[in-house]
Length: 80
Image 1 (cartoon, rainbow, N blue to C red):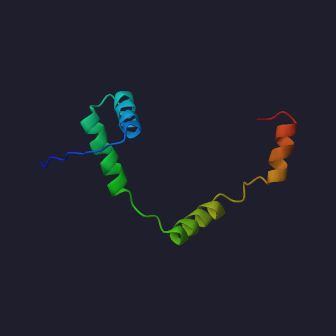
Image 2: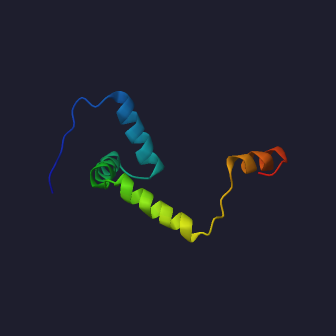
Image 3: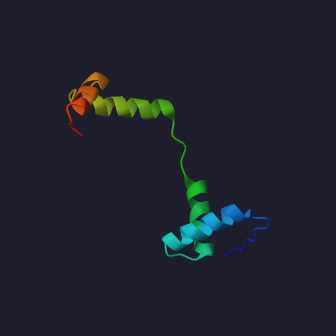
């Protein structure tokens, strides 16, 4: 396994990393690795393909959609 040394890490970034590590019960080193993995392995989403799949899902639901006007009316009547 390779080693990596980071220099000149801004103190605010280090504090956020340390806080996140504590919340996840990990060491700062492990948290940094997880953050790097998440940043470098995220996949690019093609907007056109995403919209096609969303539209297909929407059609399969059979038109159970509320308009903004209907939502506002429900809220004004006290319904969450």
